[in-house]
Length: 327
Image (cartoon, rainbow, N blue to C red; front, top):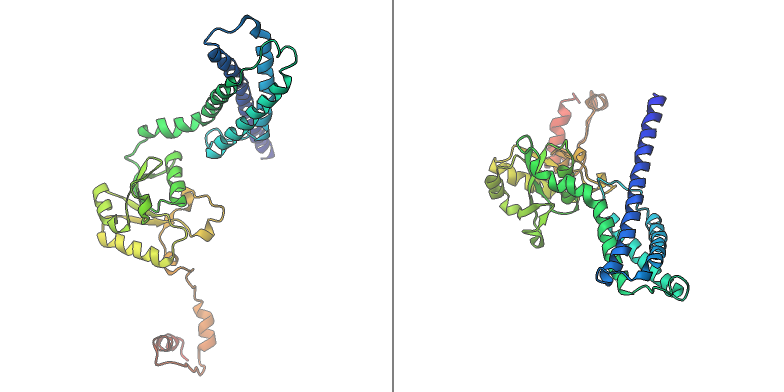
């Protein structure tokens, strides 16, 4: 077992190393190209005869500075498949700061050989920044675009349950993204329902907010919805009950499912495994009480019991229940 575990760890480490090496080499190519391209565009495709050696030094300096900042921002330790906006923001910061740093360094080096022979045009800094950001960012987001954008129209829809998601907030957005990304998902999100007027008509991951809670019966009828997923982790049990009753009155949806409440999703991440059938505690707002009848019988049987307030609804119910245990 240990040998198998070590082998798996070795494969994972090797895969991670190859991924880092791939992006590192790619960044070297992109940064070198962006410097050359910015000069080429600046001089309208005809570089001066004395530019070869200085241009090589400019490329080496840009590689050293930009790669240092990319490493500093941990842009080689990420999942290519699940790259997010956070990584793109890091690329923006790393390249912005490194471009400023490169410009300052070239300003101080402009009086030294070989830089004095072929000055660095200031306009090339902006062009270099735009090209390098586009190339480096595009490569990192490319796999996710392929998996989520290009392949999505070809996914089999017949085998998936058509799901209407109640709640277009953070939880609804996350669970929709998970449904679209997970190959084993049995769910096909077809629309959102949200009571926020500002969210009406907006599109999240290609899925539109179709209306508010009051429109849910018409939405289900027009879209042949199989399941309703309530993605409102912070909702009160009263709201859940109202939604459930409204949906069940229509008799148009086979199943109603729900995400756990906000206290059960402390890590802020929502996955398909969090979805479950709506249960009694979701409507009560607390866990149901499990009664140990044997303990109660031992406590009450053959004993004199005084019930205060026996004329009220709770007292009368207690009287009927206690009679079962032969007081």
